[in-house]
Length: 95
Length: 121
Length: 111
Image 1 (cartoon, rainbow over the protein chains, first blue to last red):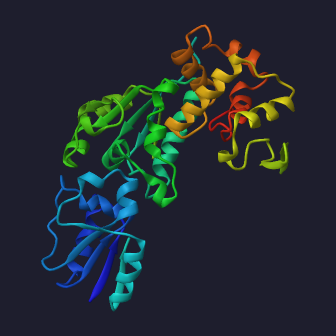
Image 2 (image 1 turned 135 degrees about the horizontal axis):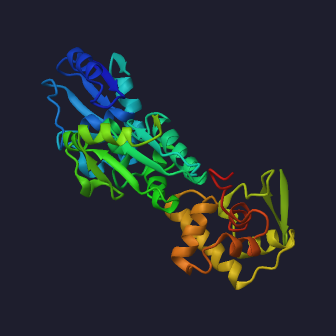
């Protein structure tokens, strides 16, 4: 399984498209930095089936998005991030 | 004869992922300190700068929203937002931390024509 | 880097005399910094210093002269919200000197 990290807002459509196409069922997609804007409830994204999508807490809080996330997206902290890196065979940064 | 020029600072990046938003704001504040009239226009992901409740301590950055909320203290009160940029992100004026005016595409072109110097970040 | 000696402890200042650690500020620190100028702090000074600390709390930066004048005018009245009034209290460069005494960083965009 693969951990994907995405650090750009959804306005970078080419990056988001490439990232979503690269995800397989069972993978984890972690939204970091400006990637957390992809998690907004008001602007829902069609995530690939079977992909666990989460967002880094510090980046969510920094941008004032705490109460605006889609309910399907969980938040993880830095320690969780490290653990996710260890649990997955591959890590890909989409940036 | 007036020696001032009308400045427009266009800010179109989100607040923390790069230095663009901070650079735009610093430029606007510095221009105001030189007593030149400054307007700001928020386009594209720049509208995310206006969201309330920013708490960037966890990413070791200064709160851009706090500095933005000081704009009226610098007499920078001509603040404009692209209507479609705001709406396409599911946001409204109520989500903004400052009073801003909504502009559509035609009004944005007109706003640019009404300024002598336009700086884009 | 220099130090401010206060009672039996020493407080670090940067090259321009601003506190290195803003949390070390106290009214006694302000008095001691002012004494070195020398400047005797009156009530008129204190209301500006506390206004600056409120400004910093709210806007997270120390104001340059123009926003300082505006903040004073809005909070303490237009008679005090004038450069000349602030210059008399805090000679030469009011925004910088008052920020230093109030335990704030050097004003941004201050020319």
